[in-house]
Image 1: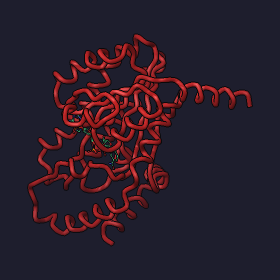
Image 2: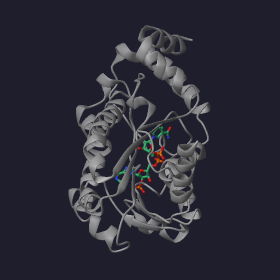
Image 3: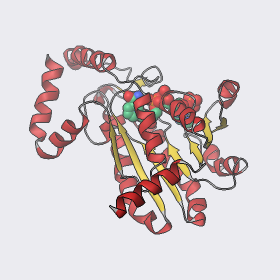
Image 4: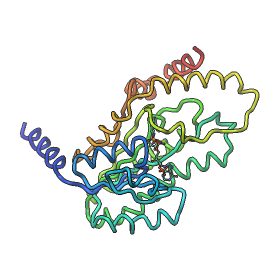
Length: 281
Ligand SMILES: NC(=O)c1ccc[n+]([C@@H]2O[C@H](COP(=O)([O-])OP(=O)(O)OC[C@H]3O[C@@H](n4cnc5c(N)ncnc54)[C@H](OP(=O)(O)O)[C@@H]3O)[C@@H](O)[C@H]2O)c1
């Protein structure tokens, strides 16, 4: 009972504490919703975009520049952040994009770009801010992965690879940062209505042997898009993780996700059959 009160008190305390928060990719989709919600709660939010000048006048929070594909941009990120705040409580790694397409039809260069942005860009940003977190002996790193970091579907092999890589990396990092009082958590959403498809890159080359599969995949994807959820659900989950003192590592959001995860671990054959059934229906 005592422990329950203590944990409720800690959640209350952290909820009412104004935190300095950096969120990457805050011009659109989840990032925009999360940044707006946290700003509304009274936190000091700094968002990032590759083109902050395009959005800055419309947003209530500060937007600074960051391009995950530019070494120079990442190397100078800490200077831009600490020109705004003297300490950082939370880093939310949210920026990313989608490469979709049948794996063999996707040029390896495009696949490499997917990993470069979603995986390496995120790791480099984290490394750029870790010295400050270690110095403070406190901090929280929340990374937006995906359900496809845990389970893969057809037509997005490189995207799934980038999100699986993030899972493995941050799972390991979480142990290493515990002694510095730096918490590491991930958010794993299913499909939600953001601008991710409009901003995606697609394989352009076509191999005739895949023509039949392509038609099925198109139907499968249209279904996924129609049933995609309201992204404010994801934003609420991220806010909750920000305001929880010691959040758990895995934070799955979306319809049917627990079934998917259980099938993945305990009945992979059934999961595969169910995906193929949907694809062929
Ligand atoms: N929507 C979904 O169903 C879904 C599901 C699971 C996971 N996710 C993940 O959620 C995160 C946010 O995506 P979203 O769905 O909100 O998509 P979105 O609406 O397209 O937003 C993507 C954000 O990332 C930024 N960004 C993209 N490429 C970048 C780069 N190279 N350097 C710096 N910033 C970059 C964009 O900012 P600028 O263009 O202004 O630079 C934008 O703010 C991504 O990591 C995505 O993989 C999405």
